[in-house]
Length: 261
Image (cartoon, rainbow, N blue to C red; front, side):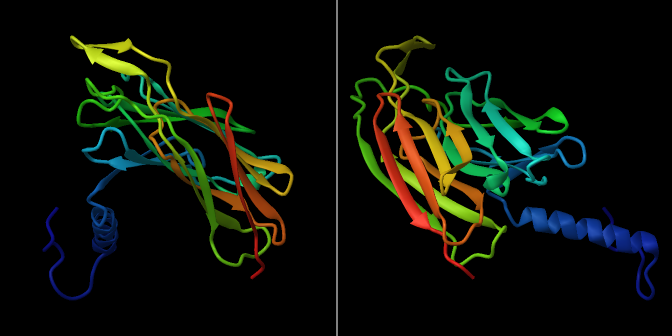
């Protein structure tokens, strides 16, 4: 791109468009630690935000979202994340209702070797759509290091909502659970071997009052001590409740009431 094209004085329409495009590139460059990919038709574009190179394969931050209406007759019903090249390919399945407010979620995954990250979305009116994005990681995220005894500990959920809200607006929800997680896999001679049963958070369910807003079905490929950011549609006075359950049948719950603006 020739930054000097157009010279001084009055700018042509072409110059203005070029400057606008340059501004978009500058804005994107302000996030050097992340790589973004969007794919799909208008209204069904999946935004994937991951590090350019993940140096901690056990905890890779991932944000997946779709800018789309969340109305009863037209909303995103699910987002499914997978990495087919990994020993544990399924990275999470999110189910949304209109009470989710936004089809967006941020959390952390583990990966043994990286590859082509695949996200499949589904719209209640228009069906399935998908996007792919390359994920590059340091090795070893899916296996327990040799000689390591993986501890198993669960408990201490937390929940935090953004401040006072107006009815109907999308409210940010931050939730987490102190819970160890392991796949039970060990790498031997270049192969992953199941040495012990996995231990992980299996499900996270979000309610507004008594109504379901969203649900995250997890796998051992979700990082230990999961931290999740998602949204709910505000209904001031009602209580947001998050219920965690692990693959051993243990359950934990956190709740907070929505305040009024």
